[in-house]
Image 1 (cartoon, rainbow, N blue to C red):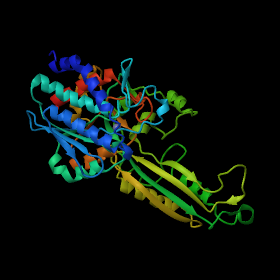
Image 2: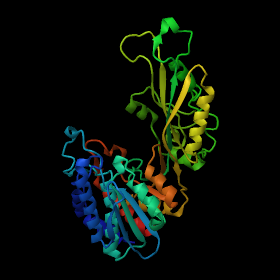
Image 3: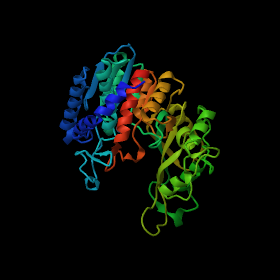
Image 4: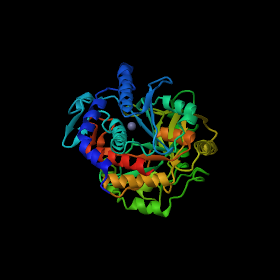
Length: 451
Ligand SMILES: [Zn+2]
């Protein structure tokens, strides 16, 4: 079928990009109070755009930056919620930008500027997909609800608070998020798993102050040495986590996943070279992608205590601190993982030092069923929009809002990213390929019609 919606996008994408530039000229830096006015003005601009498309749109204020909420009915009662964010990261270091961050510029088919890929450009694909359907077919195939927040980049909690209080009113059948990346420029991907996290530290206290290693060495426990001994009992040299019960709820990798990850031909040597490390390392029996995406971790983020200055100082440190984060995978429960880790540390810690544990928060992993019809529809939509096979990938990091949605709204979340890791989100010269912008817009339109 010659696709009228795709044809409309092909005929109008140049204008879409001009509008996106207007969107990007607002320095909606949510982290900086000096930009609060710009951030609100940006939100108001988005509301006006959505009203122009016949949406019932407005700002929701629950404290913090406003949330753009816009709803338009469609042929079916099925409701697709599109989440994104209109705020951006600060622009610094300003001197490293080739063109000013808030003066969007196209060079060689690529749009440069703050927010181009994270997340204004990706939000705009959905807005223009809706326009393309409305202008060609007159009405939307399903209800579309935009929920666009203004504090994603500054860790605000306006959106989770709103979702918790308005869940009965939001009630989507599916949620679409385009705030992530494809596997590479030729491999569109749907992300179906994100790792969760547990963060804590333990402090081992010995003498009240650093003491002379000649006068006391050999006669008392050294907290830094005890820290090393405890850690050696947490992870084995071949990457296995030794904490009893740690792996209990981990969903094993399925054959199709291992096969699908293998086909991505991840290059271990290239990663080692990029990071300037001698070689990759991780849990025995798993490939690098499997380790990064589908296996939990126990990482030391920082370890300190004792003398940190030049040359040598003959002391036994008064204390040692170890900061730890564990990345979790489906179906690990953060509270349970926290408990088995803390129990293990307490069990292996000798009674020659005093142990203190501090918690720094946790968030659960998410793992969606790729056989869910809406996730399958997203795969088909992206395959059509990009003209390439679309694969399923996982992500080693966490996206807290996805956990919020999974917790309160209980429907599938489609993570359909159009960006690339190399687009420089958060850094200088952030950019978005116009080819991806157009194909992303087509994919977003296909999805609404297929879901
Ligand atoms: Zn983002």
